[in-house]
Length: 316
Ligand SMILES: Nc1ncnc2c1ncn2[C@@H]1O[C@H](COP(=O)(O)OP(=O)(O)OP(=O)(O)O)[C@@H](O)[C@H]1O
Image 1 (cartoon, rainbow, N blue to C red):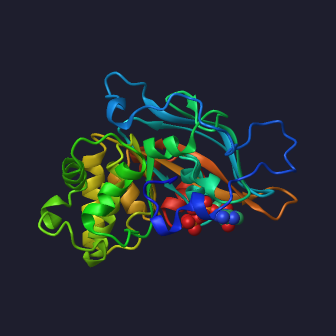
Image 2: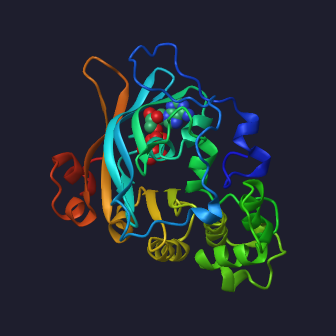
């Protein structure tokens, strides 16, 4: 089990080989090492507790000069940004600029794609998540992910939520409480409390997405990454997820990839605008971070003309 949110039938660690450093890497920079064994202290999910805003450093995750490669293709170049505690950070930009790639790098989900490589540093509370001794499974437990398409398991609503705590070996005194708390946290409890043993497939798309959020928060992450979580939902279900995000940020830090600029403007505290440009004499378009600022600034007074062109619909 690598990702508590991944369907059991397609557990990527079972079916996919680990990422390997590329032979063409002569840069001397650190590369993803998924073969390392677990030697760092593993915080117990129950005891770990969540750091409150008052006592925590402002940034939960800091990326420094992060570049992401698929084989020899550099998809994203030198991204440096801070993810603020209890904030919603939106990643926006035209298709192919690397938003999802950066998002997946934040919890080592890219490791599951053969041939990927990350250079630079991604630190979670100051700890390099790509460090040799770091357990990627623990990284993904603390930094959970919700995907574009709701992907409940072919199981009951209850078992969907209980799955992560079970397979990650969380010490749980009462699973019923964990399930209820998680479903309440995802604003789904009232709608499903009388049918917990029914199949998750009987839920609407919006409910399924909230179930996936419940499944993610059941393993007590601190950060939730959301990759276009509303793109498969109608406007009403989208609005419920956006309301939920605003509630969740009281307890969690959220990073969301969205194509919906109104959505970024509505929910995000900070917004990062990416674009993809071809290097001179090079056909490949590499994504990079153009501008990262408070959302109100990005949408009302961006510093870079490319941001302005994009948000005003002139480009992308
Ligand atoms: N598994 C992969 N293997 C090879 N190249 C990939 C892979 N995934 C993404 N890419 C490439 O990396 C670049 C960035 O892709 P990514 O999906 O991160 O962009 P994006 O901004 O999220 O796009 P979109 O908005 O369309 O989802 C693109 O050129 C894409 O083709």
